[in-house]
Image (cartoon, rainbow, N blue to C red; front, side, top):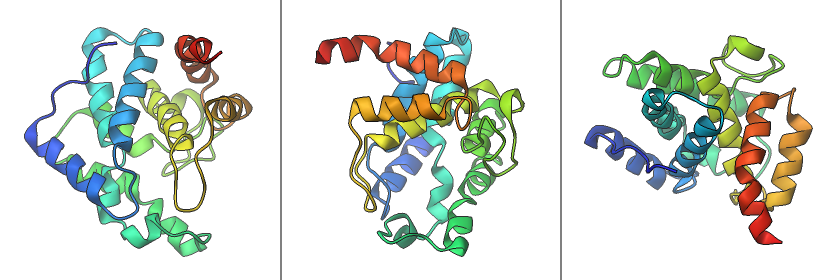
Length: 194
C-alpha cells in the first residue's frame, strides 16, 4: 500500500488541532485515511484519484472543530438536540474547507461521509449510488476504524465483531460493494491472526 500523500501544512495543522480536541480520538483521521486508501485501491479507484480520496478521508471530521468537545466526550446518551448539533459537522467541515479547496471529491467526502446506502443518513438523505463512491468508501472506512477504537461511551470492538457488524449493515448503512472489498482487503490480516 502506498504511503498517505504529504499534506499541505494548513491541512496538517487542522488535523493536529482536531486530534488534540476534547472528545476526539487521536489518530482517527489518519487511520481512516489509510483504510480508505486501501479500500479505494481494492475497488480499482484510478491512481490519479487516490490522493483526493485520501485527503477527503483525512479531513472527513474537520467540522468537529465547531462541535463542543464535551458532546463528543459525553458518556451518557445524547439528547435529540445534542445529536442534531453533532450531525452538523459534515456541513460545517465543507463550509470550512470550501473557500480554499475547490475540489468536488474532497468536499463531497466531507459532506456525505454519514450518508447511508438505504437513504437514512445525513445531511442530505442520499441513497445508494446517489452518494459518490468516494464518500461511500470513507463511510465504510470511518465506521470500521471507529468500531475498533475506545470511546467514552463504549469499549472497542474486536476485529471479528467489527467484521460481523459490517456484514450485518451491508445494504443498509453501507454500500455492499465497499463492505465486500474491505473484507477482502482484510483477509491477509485475518489469516495472520489464526
